[in-house]
Length: 405
Ligand SMILES: [Fe+2]
Image (cartoon, rainbow, N blue to C red):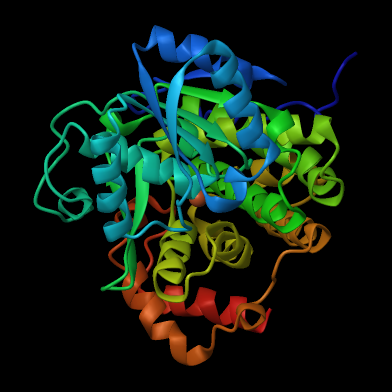
């Protein structure tokens, strides 16, 4: 079947500009498929693990996903201990305490089962097994850099959104200073990721919708980032297309395995896109909102994304026009500015259909809270690769728009 121009995947390589140098990383081995969780014993063996430390949260610990992991490990006779007390946005103290339990457990490999938080906790714990001190020492601006490779980590995501199963960052909360910071190093990238759509069937609708918005934000921010490369662009573009075609169904009918599978792959691809292309102001604001107001990451991204896109349009009209097409908009006959704005409309439409919070008022953030969020956003290091250079007033403008709706 021939594709029309509108249906064709979009190639945006700008031949008038000289190609920039780039590096592309994807060290995680991915095992995708329904039932792929059954490969866990064989992968552990291959990576040299003799006893596993399984990091998960209290809800997932009681879920069919955990039952599937237990069953596969028990039937293969693999020794393991389960740590079921991961919390959203793990704080420094929680990480250090979990690292101590891991050291005492006699386990030599970590498995993360859950959404972004347990995977990030597991990354930090695996790193602290071979690097001395508190995780606080290794956070952005800390006194130490990761010097030794982590013990092997296998990530099994139960949500489709964070991409943490393939990335080099672990986001940790400094609750004293009300800020979320990252440990970022190639040594903490999971060695393997098991992407099993079947174990994601039980994810609640709001989590499906909001983590899907996180994945979309990864794809869009990496695509328009100043650090984007043809490789990250290819990943970001394909992820956007898959999310545009599947997130509505996955959020409306969580039992639709095809939509779940497509979202799981889209999230993975968007993770690879942003590990290489970087992120921008949406993540800066979301991280600030998470640190101060404990706003769940995907919900914060969904609240901010369309308004940040509006502000960022002048930075790259062509690429925002590509995003519009990837998200199914008809841009024929439109000016470059109109086509770019169609991308913002597509995100508004998607957000409307998946029923996530739409204004800051919906999550009880008030205008008096803006300055704190702005102050915590400005030091975000990835603002340097946002498509437009932003100052405090720009962040305020985005927050005002997100407040008014
Ligand atoms: Fe994210």
